[in-house]
Image 1 (tube, helix red, strand yellow):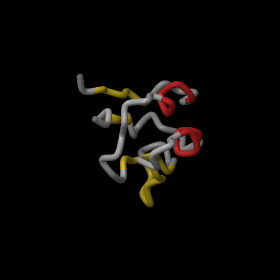
Image 2 (cartoon, helix red, strand yellow; image 1 turned 120 degrees about the vertical axis):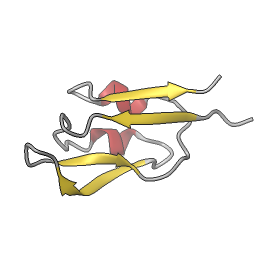
Image 3 (tube, helix red, strand yellow; image 1 turned 60 degrees about the horizontal axis):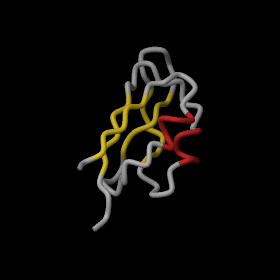
Image 4 (cartoon, helix red, strand yellow; image 1 turned 90 degrees about the vertical axis):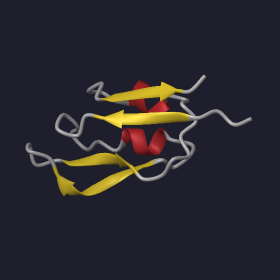
Length: 71
């Protein structure tokens, strides 16, 4: 049975470094075409293939990503 997870990104605090996107083995994240209030493009979840590995949260320099894993 595959592990399932969910990613929550605080888009107003994201600075668009794209480290989370590069670290995701499931290609769950991508950059938004929009910008947040600070003028940065931000990461968004683009599919539901998240396994809850939390690579994205670990590499985020601003700690704006929370990963939830289903039991």
